[in-house]
Image 1 (spheres, rainbow, N blue to C red):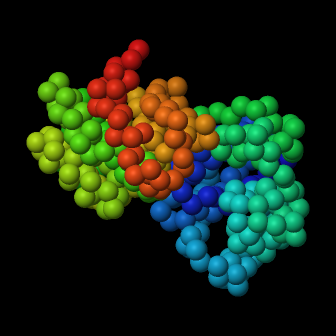
Image 2: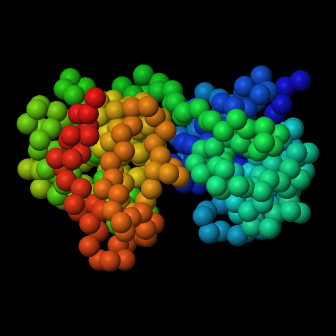
Image 3: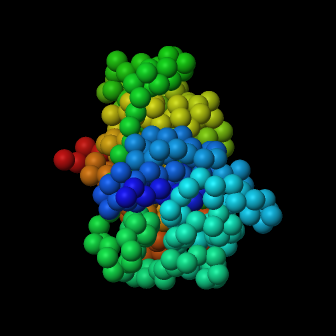
Amino acid sequence: MSRNILIISPSWIGDCVMTQPLYQRLHELYPGCTIDVYAPKWSMAVLERMPEVRRVIENPFGHGALKLKQRWQAGRELGKQGYDQVIVLPGSFKSAIIARASGIALRTGYVGESRYLLLNDIRKLDKAALPLMVDRYTALAHPSQADFNGHSGQPHFQIDPASQQAALAKHRLDTERPILAFCPGAEYGPAKRWPAAHFAELARRYAAEDWQIWLFGSQKDREIAEEINRLSNDVCTNLCGSTSLSEAIDLLACADTVVCNDSGLMHLAAALDRNLVAVYGSSSPDHTPPLSDKAKIISLKLECSPCFKRECPLGHTDCLNKLTAQMVWDKAHQS
């Protein structure tokens, strides 16, 4: 008997990428199942590149919006779609409200914000046993955490060649020379951002080897990308804020090597199977590493890090300032 499953997705881009191994596992456990994902509009392009997902349904509620009445109404509408199970990945009360309102028979998720009355297949998360976020998601595919083998797969996106060619043409780009992609932003804060001067030094070095350097990010990252380009003597193509997320994914898939901070774009690059150097400062790869065999992690592992702060509490950000372009170059060329 086929199982129809609804997933209530997390909001962050990186977290959305890390849900794909859950969908892979559900298809292994329930061959022929259908998976629909309820997700914010800004993350839909990520989920649309996962072959395991039948349909992405827009979640119209923003990060901080409570709107319990509207959430209840949305849940009632979802409940008319004939799902056998809903899996709630965010840990919030308001996400579980939608699941409860749907009336779907099996409502799975972690305890989170006191959700005992909302979910009926409720799990207590053992963070020590499941330190990786991806494993916490994948474990929910199984009847219990004890049934989970402790290993998740890796995200792997499908790219449509026609869509990719359209993005290249729109932004007047080509793939005739090798491409180095930089993702210099980090939504969380400056303690996760490698300095612009270091990116620029690395850009000049690759440009001397006849590489193209493309800069990816949102409109918020455009200023730092402009600084990188200026410091590198204008050898970069700044795409920050000028692409949709869908176009950014297709163009990032063209890159031969990607250098990025711990960010959502890092997880996208990993899912695109790019050669990747992930720079870690205030955060740690022990919880949300890039999920790819082609990813290399670089961190100075100072005594004060990881501190998980948005800004350096000591005022020096040595974990990133002292991590030089030479170190990243060496890591990228490490066999």
